[in-house]
Image 1 (tube, one colour):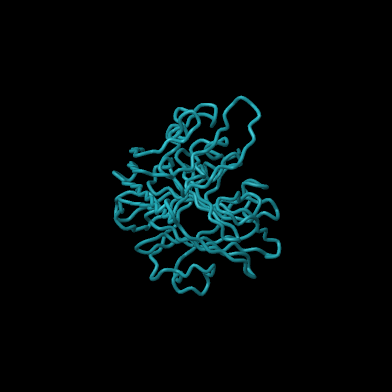
Image 2 (cartoon, rainbow, N blue to C red; image 1 turned 90 degrees about the vertical axis):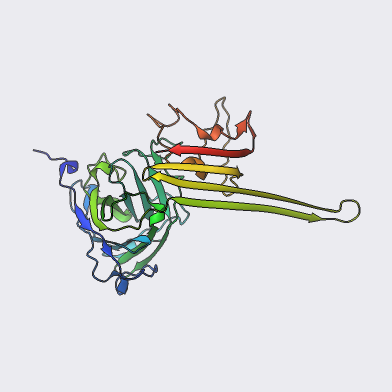
Length: 345
């Protein structure tokens, strides 16, 4: 009788209150802040030998302070010279490099979560999962997996003589969680051991699943987060001043705007914007379009990214009930956005 890995008991672990903030230097052994923290281990392969134990040991430490969640990983390697380090740009793909990912379901609803990942180069890879099980990003074959979401967090990693080590600092303000004093969250870890094409998980998954399968994640208990800070304000100011001789005189111009994010409940968020120009958003990749159909460009403006997958059904680009990239454009020409409100959750 074959038993699916999804049917195995889900693993559990404890988070530990840290006496101090760990130094984010890619060193866990010897850092007094991590003393006494019992790591999670016992990863299971999904590739190449589904269900077999991982060929290399992995230890994951989870702790917290009054302001942030800390995740440390020691990825042991018999021969550190086989560790593959690839691109170091933010949100670069992690499948062609040794890497580590963690999915965090702070509401324990088994549907929504945040994903954080890194590699031995210490890149920041993050995404928001609004519906579990999606495999791509918005605009490129995905459902509720939003790679364009960028959270505020830090990571440091380094290759050592025992493998490679990474430390993540994730502020509680970046996460969504309930109001209980002591909480349990859904969590799972994935490690890629690239030199032998090995993918392993802490909470075992069958071959057709991936780390976005939040309903099959394990559980971390003992987390005592601070009361939620429900208000986030992001102002901006742009100014220009010119001085010329003769009749031109002087000229000046100022622009002021603000973005506001307010959590009405742990899962319901109000976004507001006033006179926003979205100048901080990275530009789209240049694409040559030789057919009659418009190019499908993913949304990258922060105001529209929170819970952006709520209206996603089926395959991306095939069924789009709501496409926010059309907001701010009329007949292909940009139109200034004076203000906006958005309630999602």
